[in-house]
Image 1: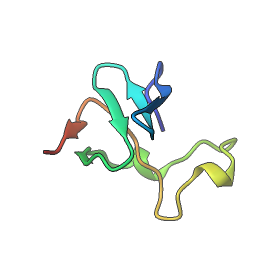
Image 2: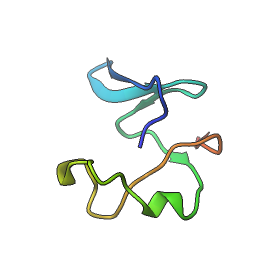
Image 3: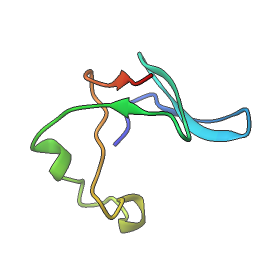
Image 4: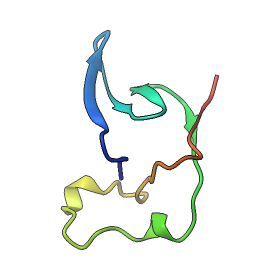
Length: 67
């Protein structure tokens, strides 16, 4: 689940997204995020191909870039 305003990105040959208030998140970047309850609930109209087998990741104000 992406925050409203998140845009796809291709930078330096890597795919990723630009997340409002966070910045660019590219393939291979490490990050932390938190959440409970809502992360286990996915919208009914979301195609199964959009949901990772391990579950959904929800980005919120708690996203933090790892070094």
